[in-house]
Image 1 (tube, rainbow, N blue to C red):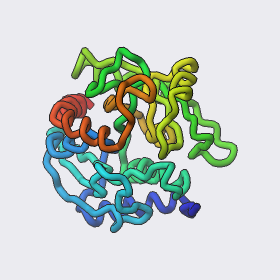
Image 2: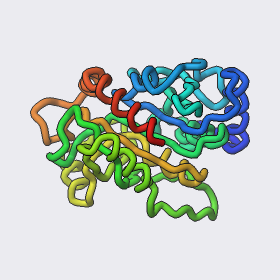
Image 3: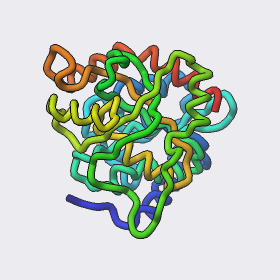
Image 4: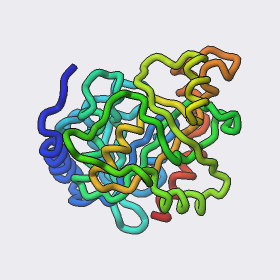
Length: 268
């Protein structure tokens, strides 16, 4: 396993490179777009520049099908610029926690005050149907890891900003909320593990987001989390779980999610 050295300095170097390659000095909002959410980058504003992720220090070409592998600068209607991160590093890729949260730290170094984290995830709560977006109200970090190093004690009480969730509800009053559990992956959970997660309070389960959210809070960012329910979790549906199912559900939901996220971003 390789770990990135000096993560804060690397984030500043990445932010400087993004500013040089895009011609945009300051990005006030950042979005990491997971499975199903990618089309939002086409509708939230005017694309100023698209940069291959592997041209920016600390980033890598995406190792997961369904992720663009680019960084995109977008001018919003407000005149503010948003940085769209389409090159998420997952914990299971073995690059270390610093690599997983490098995008968030780069967003902070680029000037972002708001971080939107989205993903495709399994539904544990039967109230959440496949194809439905759900706001993340809180999380269970079950990776046995943390991006916070040393004696730095970070308050996570309002990690998924109640203010931002209220703005999202104003954009779409029908949005439900749920507690998200991040597991390491890349294997899916067993039915017994899903029953355990349900007992301890998880309503959504996936393999990203929680570690990034913690790093975002440590960096002073306000966090909004959104999950697309791509399938019932293990043992709760009739079909075996597969990444192809996740991608297919994401493609079907993309137009609706893009429109939703556009309305949310317009309120920030």
